[in-house]
Image 1: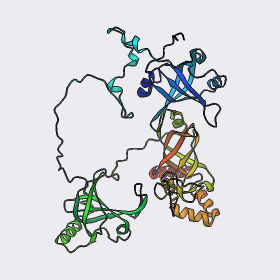
Image 2: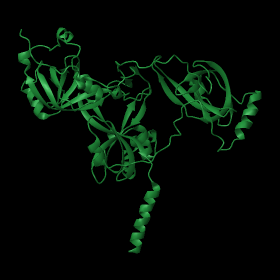
Image 3: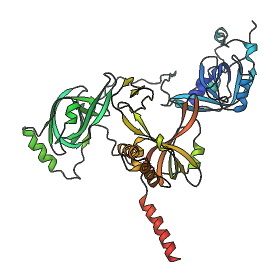
Image 4: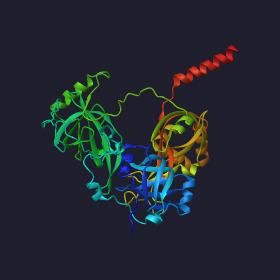
Length: 469
């Protein structure tokens, strides 16, 4: 067989995928092409640059899709991609092809083009390097985790040990006895253990001592269910285990003692009761998430953030809008796994595909699809369980009971609470794949607090205009 004189853009795919560069025009070879399920116009390709094969390549141009059906994009065909975009799905970069040119048909090549290593070894030392093939160190980003860097070592320091200036503290998995004052008590929750395939109950307590330091103590099973301690009482635990999860916290399966008959009990109680609200600022051994500083919220219009939502980006947008439509109530609730909260299989009774376990119980979860609008445009968004409760000012348990007892009253509640209501929301827009098709999904991450002072000012201005005219 005669040698095929077609040069591929050697290792260009790694440059494109790692540097997110969409300005190149790589010459690649098609190794596989197929039509995606449920779509005649979407074609998926596996492309080869002489070194690596990338299978996540999709044609999004209808005219190019017709070339596939005309058998012009057969295996071993060499193409030049003239225009493309990059998107991500679950940390996988997807190459979206908008335009390409066919350089040589696959029937005439009929083989996978491999670079001749012998010729590459005979190249003289003073050969010229293509600048596009060099990846600078400043192009390395934490988005990609599997980097291999080849560089000169300019300086190497000696090995130094890290010392914590505060104190090294206890090692994780250390077993200690602890006594402190209960600062807060959380409700009982359930937790699924994947190793033992069991659901256990837990309760989280925040305890403090006379050093003005607080940490978390987690109780399990019957000790969590039957716990009757209150904030301000002294608690003592024998055999608590130190764990390291965003800081140092404690857990125990032993029975805690409330108001133990110990000398430290009265001292801790007097020390805690002597502190007023301003003085109850404790040093935390764990990373707290309840003291975040909320910067000024910057809003955008629906039309503007829809224009910004390009296929290769994950976009967060703050929008002030009005609810104009909602999906059917029959689609609002679903049975979920008590361990992972995923939807249970409808074919089997309370079977979770993700946990591979059949449960005796289930929990109801809620999901809403609403249409929001403003002066610029409208869009359908998805609202999940927690944000539904905030939006409707009721728990999901109360809402499902209302829907099951009286669907008409449930519909009236939706009309009263949602329809034509003005809300402020934070929306996440991202690319998702469903049955081998890619689409942009808009999810409400949080319901933002309304600026009541602004609303009151607008109402005051309207009142003055109506009464002064």
